[in-house]
Amino acid sequence: MPRLIRDGRFVRPALGISAGSPALHRALNLPRGVALVQVAPGGPAARAGLQPFRRGPDGSVVPGDVITAINDEAVGDLDEMLAQLERRNSGDAVTLTVWRAGQTRRQAVTLTSGD
Image 1 (tube, rainbow, N blue to C red):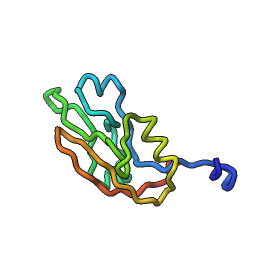
Image 2: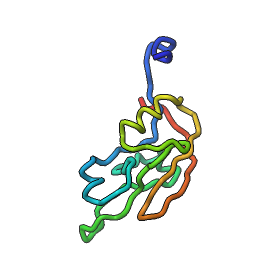
Image 3: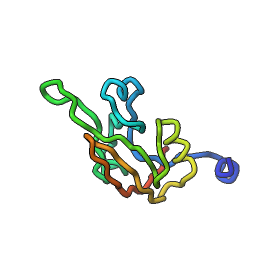
Image 4: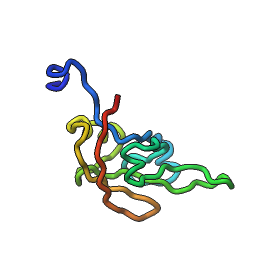
């Protein structure tokens, strides 16, 4: 709210991703977090090497990334991730904890404007 009052508008910092549904999490037995189903070309997530879940040529699921934490604060779902992003600004650097195919890694990302 302070940014809205100060600037006359609120722009949520963004990672440049689209999130999968809870049904996707259940179907693929994924950990709690935000499964990526789209990564915007040239966006922060793409520059950091994050990958979306997608279908392979044979119809199988190609493993993608699940964001499980931002700056070591757990992300249980999309709403929790958005709440964390709202506390930050475009240009802020954050460290994501990312799960892919049973492996976890930490990845630095600089947020951009979500407008």
